Image (cartoon, rainbow, N blue to C red; front, side, top):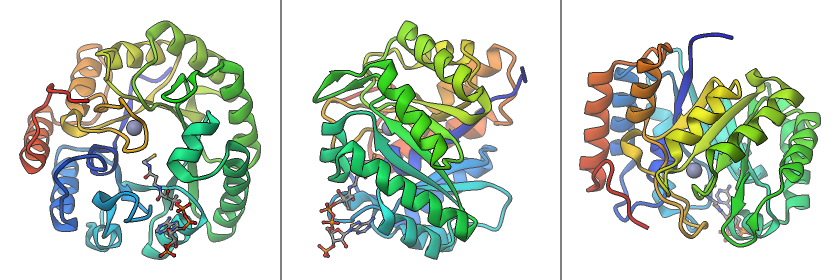
Amino acid sequence: MTDSVTINDVGPRDGLQNQAKILSPQDRLKLVQALLDAGLRNIEIGAFVSPKAVPAMAGVEDIVAGLPDIDAEFSALIPNRKGYERARDAGIKTMGLVVAASNTMNERNIRMTTAQAVDVARDVLAQAREDDREVQVCIATAWECPFEGKVASDTVLSLSDQLHQAGAASLIIADTIGAANPRAVHQLMSALVAQHGSEYLSCHFHDTRALGMANAYAALEAGIRRFDASIGGLGGCPFAPGATGNISTEDLAMTLSLMGFETGLDMDKLIAAGELANRMTDTQTGVRSL
Ligand code: COA
Ligand code: ZN
C-alpha cells in the first residue's frame, strides 16, 4: 500500500454549481490558479451541462481556454453525449460522467432512467476510446438517494460491474447528499476494492452531517487512496435536496498529513485558496447551510 493520497479538488465544479453567487469564468480561473499554486494537480474545472439547468457552470469553455500549460489532470463533469462532445472539442482529456445509483436521482439530475444512463455511458465510453479520451464514471447517491432512501450495496456493485465492462477508466463513488456513515462506507468500499482493486476507485463525500471526514477515514481504511474534496468546503447539488458542502480540501489535506500521508500540497497556500474561494462566493468555511 502506498503512503500517498491524491486529492482531486472539485471546488470549481461541485463547489460553485449551487452557490447563490455566480462567478464569472475569469474568477473561476483565478480559483483554479490558486489551487495549482497550492500544489493541486487534479482539479475538476467545471461541468459541460446545460447552462439553463446550472447557470453557475456557463462559460466553462472559457475556463478551458484559459488553463495554464502545466502537467495537471484538469477534468470536467459531463451529463450526457452532448456534454462529452463539448468537453472533447474544448480540449478536455479527462471527463467525469455522472450515473446515479438510484433511478429517481438520475431522472431529476440528468433526465434519464438508470438504464438509459448506462446506455449513454456505453456510447460515450466507446466514443472516448476512439477519441483517446479518459472517461471516469461517478456513481452518485451510492449510499442514499434523497428521493428513494437507502441504496443497496448490491445495486452499486452491479452498476460498477456494468460500467467497468463498458470501459470506465475509473469509478468515483459519491455520497451526494452526505448521508453515508463510516461503517457503511467501509463495507461498500471494501466490497468494491475486492471487485476492482483500490487503484480503480475514488471517493466523494459531502459533510452534511459532519461525517465527511469520518467517512473518508473509513474509505482510507478500506484501501482508497484517491478522494474528491472541495476548497473551502464549498459544494452541493442543485438537484439533490439536502446536499451541503463537500469535505474541505484543507481539512482532508491536514488530516492526511497528520496521519503521515503525502499529498504534495502546501498547507498555507491551500488555506489562502480556501479564503479566496470563500471571499469570492461570500461564504465561510465550516458554516454549512441547507
Ligand atoms: N450541455 C449544454 N446543453 C445541453 C447539454 C449539455 N451537456 N445536454 C443537453 N443540452 C441542451 C439541449 O441542446 C437542449 O437545448 P435547447 O433547449 O436549446 O434545444 C436542452 O439542453 C434540452 O435538451 P434535452 O436533451 O431535452 O435535455 P434535458 O432537458 O433532458 O436536460 C441535461 C438534460 C442533462 C442537459 C440537464 O438536465 C443538465 O444539464 N443537468 C445538469 C445536471 C448537473 O449538473 N447536476 C449536478 C452535478 S451531478
Ligand atoms: Zn458532490
